Image 1: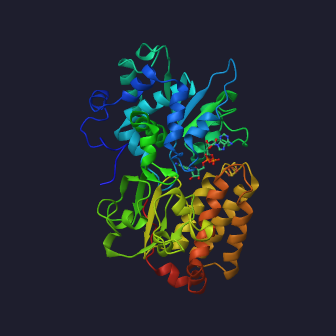
Image 2: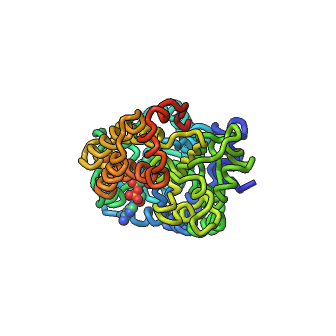
Image 3: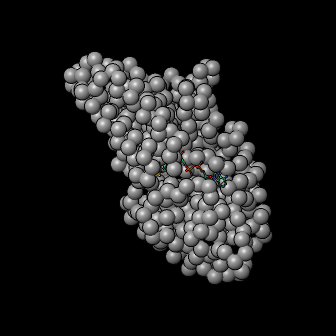
Length: 442
Ligand code: NAD
Ligand code: SF4
């Protein structure tokens, strides 16, 4: 069994309550930092751990923290991004539901490290149960003296608030999230300046994903060096993976980074293979924003090496033959899945969620959805396939925020690896329509 750092106690009855969480060693990291460490020490441990942002971008967390500006007379903020909306990604929701105090503890440790006295957990608006769970956990922590003024007599004050999200996928983009938190429409801002320089109310702000913040707890308890011993290369530690689609055992798994993809899909410890004895056709490994890969390329790199669940190995070969770990939203497609239909489904999502600020994204996502729809429904032309590639290229790299790239990559990669399936939809439209193809369930 792989080492568990975040989900070790997930099955302990009552672990969602303060008392049980505390009995299992909870809030030790808060005691450790407030009684014997400086904020700089905490940042140093996180740097040593090699932790990379678990929301999807994989940016080194310690480095992000060290970029935080410290101007005189301005507050600094920590904002936890719990607006998890990436299709196929549900690990933060799981963590907030079942072990909320791990996040609260991580928020206290991280806020202390950053010198923040007011911090926010921005939770996707649809997740009302999780919002209530977190509010209850915050009240329990406050009653026990872990939040509020002069925590544990250390002189450190922290107020922690839960903010329901604005109900749009784009509110998970960090600058849109900040706009939304300020009470405005969640439109992304142009970066730079990065939030670390000018974020919430134009003050220095760090925005970190739920899982990243939770990971600071074992990092402080065991030390950054110990954390860095887990994983492989620059992919240190463990990662939560949301596994869905045509798998025997979909769910949330904590893996040590570096597990072979084949083991993750087929072993009983993880997904237990493809459901109903079918063959694997393709995988979207890191949430809908990353390129799709056919079965042969997700299991092995072009050099014939085993593909591993790590930032580097999944990206091996670039976009020609690789993909990204992203948010860890791992969707498996069996041999009966229609790639054209699934690609259209993703395109429909991005068109709906585009905020409309920049024209390549606003217009391009609409065109991609329209063209994919006509291919799927038997009205497509061969030239539509190249038209899709052309539109995706015009979006990529030309937009304010990553939603544009996220919309372009699934389309471009689906055509790169499954062009014959798109052509088949043009040459045999009725057959394509008749076959009982479905959408992967995620
Ligand atoms: P990004 O690479 O622009 O930034 C990553 C982080 O590093 C940000 O916090 C940014 O502020 C910081 N950063 C980068 N360069 C910096 C610098 N020079 N100075 C200071 N800070 C710096 O990516 P992003 O927009 O944060 O995230 C995109 C990813 O989010 C996508 O790859 C996708 O996988 C993922 N995503 C996840 C979800 C989800 O529900 N989990 C939803 C949508 C997208
Ligand atoms: Fe809005 Fe799309 Fe531009 Fe992002 S890329 S700012 S979602 S229009």
